Image (cartoon, rainbow, N blue to C red; front, side, top):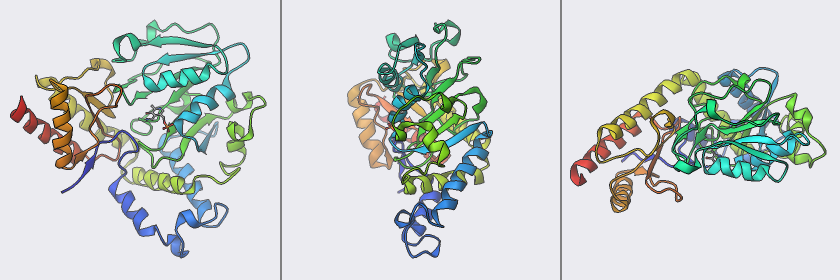
Length: 358
Ligand code: PMP
């Protein structure tokens, strides 16, 4: 029985990537050692990190104005690094509050300066992205921070605010490389790798180089310039996570890049939402214009039925469907690595479950 893992992160990786990693696990490039046993300064690892960066630049069409950095500490450390590096004295920053993770980012930023919540959907349980033309930006914030996809609530931006010369900063942990974006719209993009890019242990940070020059006197390992000036190798980087990220980005290029995967992602999410909308049994708590193409959140008529759904689905190889502990319900996370066949199998199961219990 095939297993399709719908977990929100760490999440499934492409089967082809897992196979290559397995084959190379104990003997990378005929070195007699696994990649994680080899020096980060040695001849095997250098091309890995270089290729990972080159792949990312190619996939996302990133210009030389931006640096690509690999940083430990996950997306949560970026919640602190962003304000530490980019908040200007006396200017504070604007944060859009669209869910658990953006609230955490804003809370962390408050340690470093004034935070203005320029928009929030908290009053409606984070069921939508607040309409951008109603946002209340402050006079001259150091930057504006958004969370492009809200992993817990299942919402996603379908367009981004135009912020002129105020840098737009985005936490893209749960939708990076899932659809085409224009990197030039952003001052900085960050993402924990463990959903769309690879295993946990590394965050990808794409930062406009001039912004990294804003930084005052802060600890070395928390400065973007340390990573930029040393090719993310000031100290020992998370070599295995970067190797996996390289394999995942090779895979994505082979698949035809982000434009191609976006089409598949659209098909996957549309077919799920279509079923949810036409059924009287399943219900989406998310506003129609804000639905995530990565985390499809839905409810059943009762919590008992939801528990039964999760249990029976798992018995059929459809795992990780339980919603986040803070909101309950069902959440199908369908990142790039989830094949169409996985979503089709889930849909068949949902129809069958409704027929038996509806
Ligand atoms: N931002 C978003 C949108 C997330 O989904 C998550 C994790 N699920 C985080 C930040 C935190 O990531 P990490 O565990 O890498 O710190």
